[in-house]
Length: 144
Image 1 (spheres, rainbow, N blue to C red):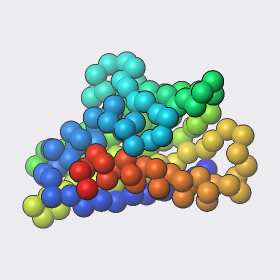
Image 2: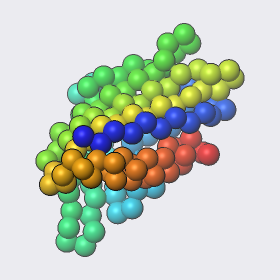
Image 3: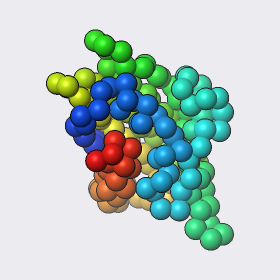
Image 4: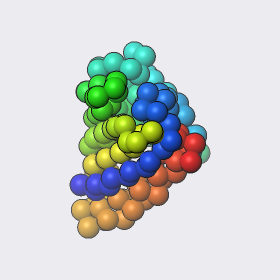
C-alpha cells in the first residue's frame, strides 16, 4: 500500500482552511483529467459520498470516497475528515486535518492507497506521484 503525508502551513484561520479543504469540486481543478463532485449528501456529513471521475478519451474510472468521520474545527478542537475509497481501481483512505497554529493553521493530508493491478514494488512510485499531484491540490485549495 502506498502512503504519503503532506503538511502545509497557512495564514488562514482554521475555519476558513477547513472550508477550502472540504470544497470537494475544487479538488479536481488541479488533477489532470479529473472532476470531483459530491455524489450523495452535502459532502459535509458522515455517510456522504465524494466522487472523483478520471477520464482520458474512452478510458475512465471512478474513485468513490465515503466520508466515515467528520469533525469540524472549532476553537480548541482540530478538524478531521476521513474518506474511505470504495472503488475498484483505487482502494484505501485519505484523511484531512486542520489545526490552529499561531495566528493561522496547519493542514495535514494523509493518504494510503492501493491501485488495482500495480505490484507492491511500485508503491514508492505511487507515493511520489501522490505527493506531487495532491501537493498541488493542497497548495491550490489554500491559495499558496
